[in-house]
Image 1 (spheres, rainbow, N blue to C red):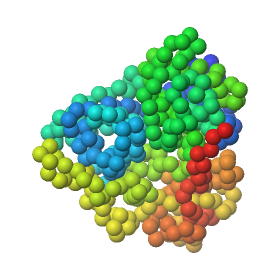
Image 2 (cartoon, rainbow, N blue to C red):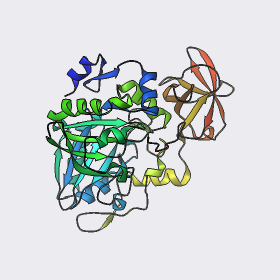
Image 3 (cartoon, rainbow, N blue to C red):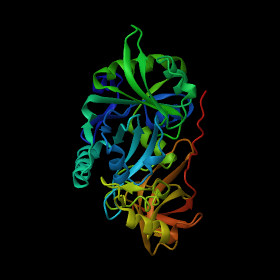
Image 4 (tube, rainbow, N blue to C red):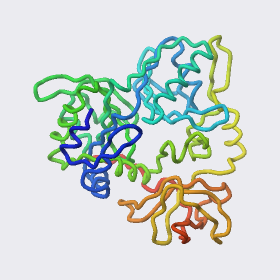
Length: 379
C-alpha cells in the first residue's frame, strides 16, 4: 500500500518475499544512524497478521509455540517460536493478547501461508474450537523507531505513550489534521534495538498515516528508512532473522534462543489432559545436554566484512566448524560483525576462529551477545 510513497521519496526498490520494498533511500549508514540518534520510519506492511479467538485460542497458541503464553497479561505481547516435532523452526512470531481470549499473531512475510496452514492443521488435529482470520492483506504496519519516536507519535494520539512500557500495546486512535480518527494498535516494540513503536491499522490508511508521521517528525529530522538499515540495526542488536539464524533446519536452542523455550510450561488438550507443546522433547533435550551447534556472535579481528553463508573454520584454518548466518559492517560500532552457526565447542567467549572470504582467511573472535545493548533511550 505504500509503494507510491516510496517512489515519491526516491526509495531504491527491490523484490523482497514477493513484495516490492525500499532497500534504502539515501544510504544504509545514514538511515541506520538516524534510528540510533533521531527517528525514522519503516514500511513493514509485508508482515503477516492473524487473529485467533474462540474457546480454545489460548490452548492452540500455547501448543504451537515454545514460550509460555500463560504469562501474558491483557495488553502485552510476547516473542513466540513455532516448531515442528523435530524441534526445527517453522517461524518466529509475536503474540499480542487482548481481553476475552482474543489474540493477534504477527508472523514473517515469507511464511504467511505456511504459518496459517499450520494453525489450521493443529486446530483440526487437536479438535480445538477456534476462529482463525488471516488479516494480512487488510492490515498495514508501520514502525517508528529511534529516541524521538515517542515525541513524534505523541502528536498523533491522545494515548499517553510515556506510560506504555516495552512490549505493551493499546488499541487506540490516531488523530489526523482534519480530526479524522484512525483505529490503530500501538505497541512499544520494534526490530532495531532502539526505543520505538509498531503501528497496526487498516491498509487503505497507510499513505495517510505514513505522511502524518513524516510531518510530525519533521522537527526531529525524521527520515524514511529501508530494509538495508533494518537489517544492520537488528544485527547489531543480535535479533534473529528467519531464514538465517533460525529456519526449518535450525532449532531455537541452536539459534541461541533457548530463553524463549519454556519446557516446563503447561499445555492441555481439548479434554484438559496435559500434553507437550510441539517440539518439546527435542528442545528440552538440547537445553539439558547442550546442542551440537549454536549461533555465536563474532567480531572481526582482521579487516574484512563477513557475509551470509561464508564458511567458518577453527583458528588453525584446518577444520570447518560452521558458517555465517548474517554479517555486516556495523555503523554504530564502526567494526565488522557476524552471527554464525558453529560447533558448540567453539562457542565460548573469546574463542578465535577464522572466516573464509574469497579464498583468504580472516580472524574473528566469539563475543557476548548482543553487539549493541538496548538502552530504551528516548529524548
